[in-house]
Image 1 (tube, helix red, strand yellow):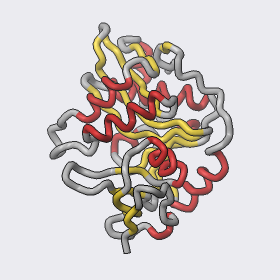
Image 2 (tube, helix red, strand yellow):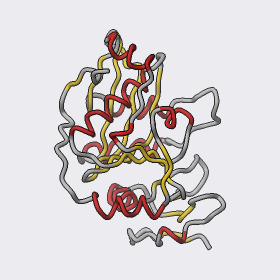
Image 3 (cartoon, helix red, strand yellow):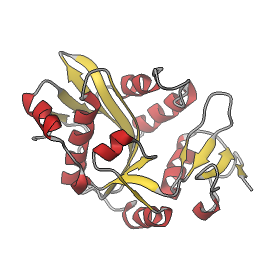
Image 4 (tube, one colour):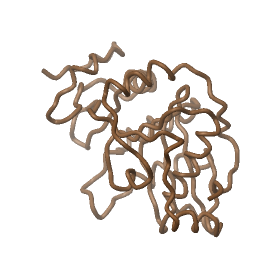
Length: 233
């Protein structure tokens, strides 16, 4: 039976109560205030819903993740990075990145990054919890991604690309810096061919919960205000 959240409580049901079909649906309802979103990620779930639906909270099993030391860069991607056509920054244009991630895409109907979702994550960014990666070409924003950083874990949310390889350059640059900062895991949530090509793999929900327990409250050496060039290939 699906749990409906109460607005006056930030408690989520145990992860093992998530439905098998659809895979990982844990709860519905509640709201998108910052405190609830932070509680959700700490618990091991995330919001994902369309306009017209109630807020839905998910904890899929298995969970798609990437270990920073396992990022895969193809020869062609290494060549693109060495050519230096892109400039990568962190936390310089969060609102622009999330709006670009929410823009219509030819292969999808609508977007799950609704206006209330955008506003909620912009608030998390103001609190120093959510972060963006921007990829620039000739001073134009051509790619990027955003997510949340807690302890030694990064929870990726969405990425976009307006130029070939732009989102890949942004992602691998982020991963290289997360590795240097001592991060242990990047949560990619759901499997895609794009993510698997970069080294993502599946782990069980129980393994993911173990990472949460071990690393959520460990400090990292993150410096999100750096202006960065692409990582060396």
